[in-house]
Image (cartoon, rainbow, N blue to C red):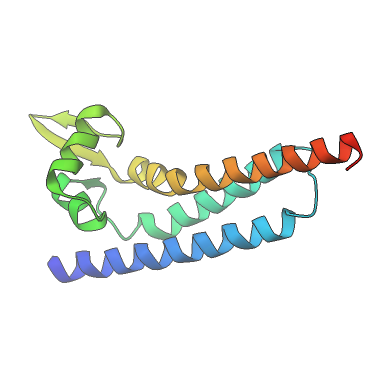
Length: 136
């Protein structure tokens, strides 16, 4: 179990690196273009998230435990439980034990990185549009 979980962690890290590379490429492509429809970038990002989730979802058990999260994320046991208690990681208690739905966790995990990239991209587009509107 430990070896297979370590393999899954490595695979998740590889997927994360690919996702970050893809987001950088998308950002480079869009840097010089003001999007007429801001939804376009959002759709690209959502598609990327869904592909990453689909690629990793079959590698993990249907329901994760706090111990699984500790091995998947670079955080302490205390931080895992804090995030669970605050509701920051999608989970629920069943019979007094935490159950973390795999698909919801992956959506949360992949989405948390992309959101900051998306915010920065939109901020850059707004600034560029404002400069163009002011004639600079």
